Image (cartoon, rainbow, N blue to C red; front, side, top):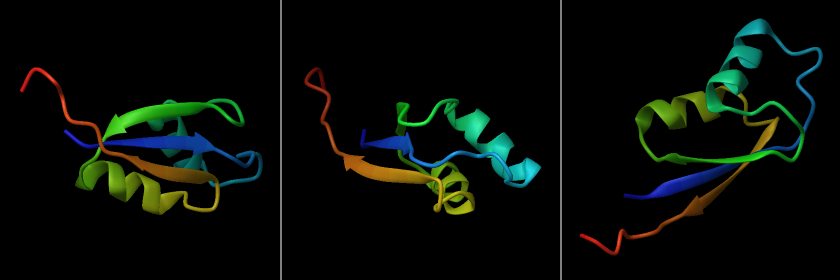
Length: 66
């Protein structure tokens, strides 16, 4: 399954509450913190809400046990 690496690059101080909630749901709390999630339409919708605060790297990895 393809994964996406998401990094918080800007502070969320002064952002709207829905944007802060989206960052919390992504698991991002500190600047330069990086998390990996499985790619999908729900994740892409969340990332579209906060594109000015995060950077996204496609990290395609195939599972060796498949």
